[in-house]
Length: 115
Length: 116
Figure 1 (cartoon, rainbow over the protein chains, first blue to last red):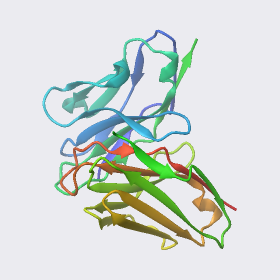
Figure 2: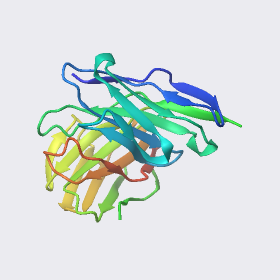
Figure 3: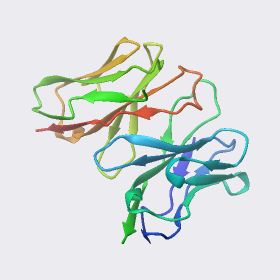
């Protein structure tokens, strides 16, 4: 069964600092990988996803993530944090099985930006 | 238009009430989803409709009854709920049906449900 681990339920960085949110998956076959963001009292919005091809994926709002098969990781980064980045971030996977639409989410990481 | 709308935004109901949540999308998506999200937790999948047919039911109690009247609408009928059912209920849609496991799921803003 697929599982996703997000290291750190809460990450706090200063405005302008590097943002690094960690995500590891457990699967014998690498799944498809997603990062979603949830702002307070809102639904989830896709930041980026990896399916095939280039392992460094660029998303919206200056975020990017790199798929590393050897490390079973898909960490999310942003070079310079902005106050508007404060939100909950979820890493998620779907298995590479036809007919499998189920997103499996990690527990989430709350990102706080300090002025 | 990449919008999924949900009504109502907030709902308070008693344990003997019957109410419905509504979700709508006009993106031509063929898969629609209901999720339940408790505070400080990730969303949990409840139901998936693919081409207006129920394709996944995650062993949800029968007091939750989904309905997909057409490809744009998804309802969740609620009856005899318990206080522990209080949560944010999220609807999502994605372009393809069962073949779409690389699809982006587009989420609505959710309905915050409180059961008294």
